[in-house]
Image 1 (cartoon, helix red, strand yellow):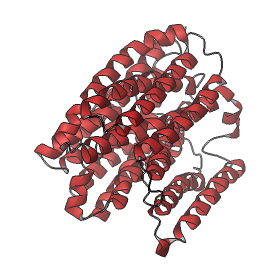
Image 2: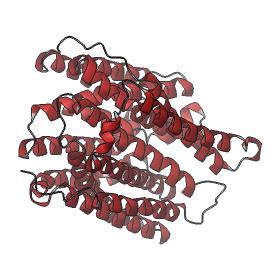
Image 3: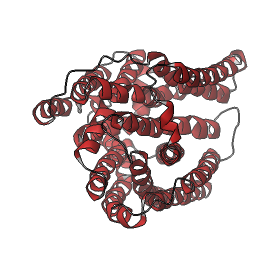
Length: 442
C-alpha cells in the first residue's frame, strides 16, 4: 500500500521540472502545459469519492487491483505519447486510476489498525510516504529528465506497479461477494466538472485575450452551476457519493476543509520553488532537483517526529503547527524573491514547508478519518484525499494563476501568489481551531 501511495504521490509532482522539456518536444506553450499538472490532480480528486464508494460496495481488493492496473496502463501510455493531446489524455486516465485505487488502499490501512496509537503510527507512515513522494517527485523529475529524457518519468513506475499488483493478490484478503448498489455517476461527473471549469475560467481570464473574452465568464458560470448541481444531486440521490449524514460530523468536515486550504498553499509553494529556481535563477533540471533535497530530508524527519507529538498534542495542535509553519515559509519565499536571493537563500523556506506539510497534513488526515467504521472507511478516505487533491489543484489555479496572469502584470508574481496563499491559510487556522479540542491520541 505504501509503494502504491508513493508512486501516485510522485506522479502529482514529477512533471513539474520536466515541463520545459515536454513543451519543447511538443511545441506547447506555458498555458497548455498547465493541464499536464492540473488535469491529473483535478480528475483524480474529482473522482476520488466515487472510488471510495466503489471500494465500500464492490470490495476493496477488487477495486484496488482495477485502479492500480489502470494507473499503470496510463503511465505506459503517457511515456509513449506521440502527441501533446495524447499525453494530456493519458494524464487524465492516470488521475482516474488514482481515484479508484487510492481510497481502497487507504481504507485497507485504516481497517488493519485499531483507532489509537497503532493507527496513528500507520497513518504517519502513510502520510510520510505520500509527502516524500510529492517532494521526491521534483528531485526525480530533474534527475530522470536530464539523464534519460522526460518520457522515463512515467515509464519508470510501470515495473513497480506490477509489483503492487502481485503483492495485492498475495497479501490482501479476498473480498466478499459485491453488493448490488447503484453508483452516483452524475454526482461524480459534476464534482469533476466544477474544478475543471473553474481552472479554465481562471487561466483564460488571466491571459487577458480579448478575442476569447467570452470563455472565462462562461467557464466560471459553468463551474458554479456544476457545484450547485452536485449539491442538488447528492440531496436527491438514493446512493449519494457523500451521504448527508457525513456533514453532521462537524470535526470531520472541518478537517477536510482545512486540508483543502492547507494543500492549496503547499502545492502553490512547490510550483513557486520550481519557477524561481529554473526560470529566474537559470538552474538546470538536475540542479533544481538537487536543490530540493533538503526539503525531502526535512520532511522525512518531520514525519518521524509527528507520531509522538500527535499522541501528546492531539490532531488539532499538530495541524495548527503545520499551518503556521507553512505560512512562515510562504512569507519567507516572497521575501527571497523580492530581494532576488540565490538558490541557497530559498532553502530555509523549503525546510519550513517540509515541516508544515509533515505536521499539518498528518494531523488533519487523522482527524478526517476518526470514528470510521467498516461501512464508511472508503468514503471517508475518498473525501479526505479529494479535499487534498482538489484543494491543491484549485490553489495552483487560483493563487499561481492570478499571480502570474499576463492581464494582471504583477510586479512580483511570487509575492502576489504567496500573499493569496497566506490568506487561505488564515482561513485554515480559523477552521482548524473550531475542529475540536484535539486531545491526545490514546
